[in-house]
Image (cartoon, rainbow, N blue to C red):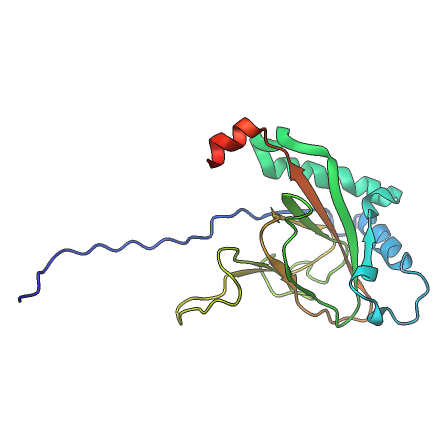
Length: 215
């Protein structure tokens, strides 16, 4: 049987439709330095911070514990409203699950997502050596937002890269992304701890609006 010749059209799409937003305060904003110092000192006079478990490296409620935290919190809320734009009226003004993470040299954060804590996640760096570098560059430590469209243990074809967006941390840099997006942090190399704040915000959509948008 002869092969039928026909016109074949091809269309390729990049299917990773999510929004990541960045905000920067001045690198020398005193709030960043003060809050980093408070987070480190709150761990106590422990001789070996390297041995701390992940739970003990967290300083929960850091944004409510001091004047520096209370100065940073409204800034992060303002950024969250900017990210949401016309949807910002649904931002819960009372929900801000937050914690500081104190990462010792050699420490890292495994791939995870924060969707149990909120709908919109912010990572605000209090320290980091990436000043003057492009945001999407390999910093120390390297913070990575991963492609949320597939499981990590699924095989990939040779032409499929792993879609991760690298962020070079520096004081005052905030990264906002949907809380369902996986992220991680590569091992940190330095002589002093690296500190960042994680804040999770809640978006409360009315039932009728959810049905119209997602059903």
